[in-house]
Length: 376
Image (cartoon, rainbow, N blue to C red):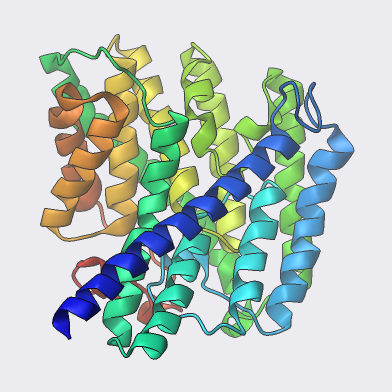
C-alpha cells in the first residue's frame, strides 16, 4: 500500500509539473505577444497609448466581475497560499490571475500555478485516498517547480555564464540586498492603504478601474519620457530582466525600476490578482545592477544579489530554505562562482521584516507554516 501511494505521489508530482509548465508557458507567451515590441508580436513597434491604458482598465472591470461573482481568490499582498482549491472555484480564481497578467498588471503567474497545484492535489487526495494536506503540499511544490523550469528553459534567469568571483562583490551583495528589501518595503507600504479601501477584502469597482488606468498611464509616461519599451514598466517583468540590465546606464535602470515599483504597488493594492514575486525579481535585479554600475562592481553579481534578496524578503522562510533558495537562484543566474554573493544577499533579505497587510494575518500564517517559516 505504501509503495502504491508513493507511486501515486510521484505521478501526481510529474503531472502537476507538466500541467503547470504548460499554463506558465501559455501565460508568458500571451504576455509577450500582446506587449513585447518585436517581430511577430501584436505590436511590432510597441503598443499604442490607447491599448496601453485600455487593457489595464479592462482588466479592472473584468477582475471585479470575476471576484464579485464569488471567485475572490487570494490577495497578492498577503503572499502565496498553499491550500486545496475546489473545482468550482478554480476557473474564476485562475481567470482573475490570467486577466491581470495578460492585461499588463505587474503580478506574476506563481499564484495561478499554486492554485493549479491546489486543485490537482485536492482532487487526487479524494480520488486516491491520500491525506489532503500532504497531497496539496506535494502538488504545490511541483507547481512551483514550473517557475524554475520555465525561466531555465527560456534562459531568462542566466545573467552570466563566465562570472568570476571578486571579493568586492561580497561587499556589494549585502548592500544590494538591503537596498532591494528597502524598495520592496516602500512598495508594500504604498499598497497597504490601497488594500485598506476594500472593506472585508471585497472588490471595489472604482478602485480597480482607477488602478488599471493609472497603471496604463505610468506605462505611457515612461515610454514617452525614456523611449524604452512599455513592458519594462508594465507586466510581471521576469522575462524583461535581461533587457533591463542591457539598458546600460544607472539612470536608465533606475527609471525602469521606479516605473515598475509604482505599477507594482498599485497592482498589489488595488484588488488585482496574481503573484507578488516576479515583479519583485525585476525590482531586485534592477536595484542590484544599478548599485553595481554606480560603484564599478559586477553587474551580474549585483543583479543576482537583488534577485535572491527579493525572494527571501518576500518569503521569510526558515534559514535552511534560505540557503536552498540562494543556491538554486545563484546556480541559475551564473553558476557556482555566484553562490557566495547569493548566500550573503539571501541572509540580508531574510533579516529585513516583511511588510504584511494587517487585515490578513491568517493568510500569512498559513503561507509561513506551509513554507517552513516562523509564524508572522
